[in-house]
Image 1 (cartoon, rainbow, N blue to C red):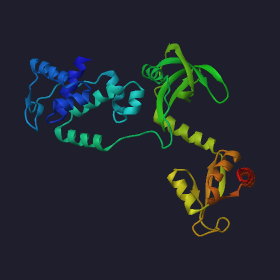
Image 2 (cartoon, one colour; image 1 turned 90 degrees about the vertical axis):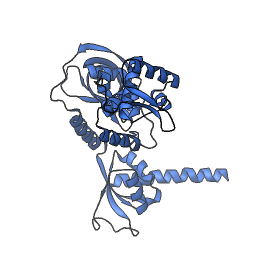
Image 3 (cartoon, rainbow, N blue to C red; image 1 turned 30 degrees about the vertical axis):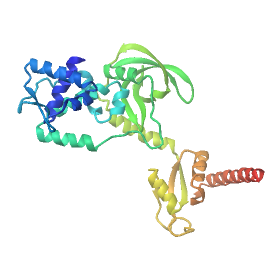
Image 4 (cartoon, rainbow, N blue to C red; image 1 turned 60 degrees about the vertical axis):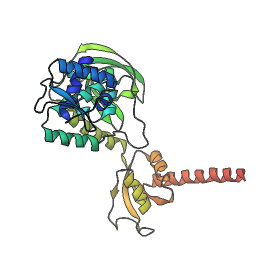
Length: 329
């Protein structure tokens, strides 16, 4: 740990013109006294650094000097692509490695590029969780990630919509989608990969040892194709809906998928600015609940079953609230 901290001090000083003991202590989460002791040890080891006094002072390295100890460790290499996403890196157990990897990467850059890297770090923050959502906190994430890195089979107790069973899997890759963690894996004995949500894994045990990862497996391509199939199967119902400008704004801000139809393909709009759209829905029941969320700002044109279901739910809603109002009076 101490050797790692000494190297981190070198990386920080190499990435900045000068840093105070307070700044180093804050970056490494130690006391200033610890930093002063570490600096003394670095000087005793022949590292050409010195302290400058005054308001603009601090520790600095001899101009032109740089350490050659910038090789990436295995955890740092795993964490490199997550260095700008501290939340997921920490969840994977790579938070410290991500910070260390970023320091090594920045320290290896020429001075002008270091300044650009610092500006990006100061002005870009990535938050992968959507609004009004809570991120998954799967307890087994680190164990599954370790199996992915090492290509080791795992046995998991998995709760699907249908049942809960033990499954033996060959984990091929991890995906973070809108705050939720998924693992792409092949069930042992099958050639096709499937997607499993980590929060649905209730228990994990070692499987039957190592497996050979398919050479032609492309995680990004698999996820794109799998996600497209899932969305198509999830929303098989296409409803024609007449929406107001206000409802169109809600759809846009919610990033909902819909297709605006040209004027003249359906009934004339009731009011200026109303637009007919095609809205993908999971089912008649789910679609009716969603349409009711627009209040009087939307009207179903077809299918007839959806229009009838919306009317029935609206009548029940009106009856229940009218009774409640009368009772309250």
